[in-house]
Image (tube, rainbow, N blue to C red; front, top):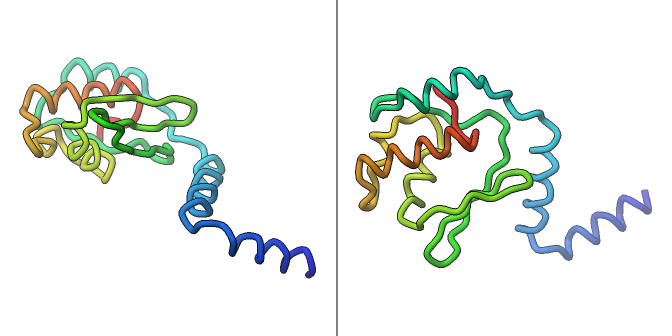
Length: 129
């Protein structure tokens, strides 16, 4: 019991966001990421239209942060940087099922939405729904 009390006391001294980040990372690593269907990914990239349904890949740990004129998608072991104009569309894409037409936010036009969706398909962040 003494060890548990000391651990609890230590955790109370840490900023809540730091604890949240560590726990989220541990949970993300505890569940395997959904495997990619490479043929389906390739077909989705090739045939992508504004009406193509997409969804975030199950159990893929992602973070999103703005860094000056860039928005950075953090993935396990790597990062993908894009123009900050894409930030609202990326948030929408990572929220749940949508189409590239749903990404027309804050000045992002249709060609830009398609480029963003293709990039996230190539990176394995989203998959065909």
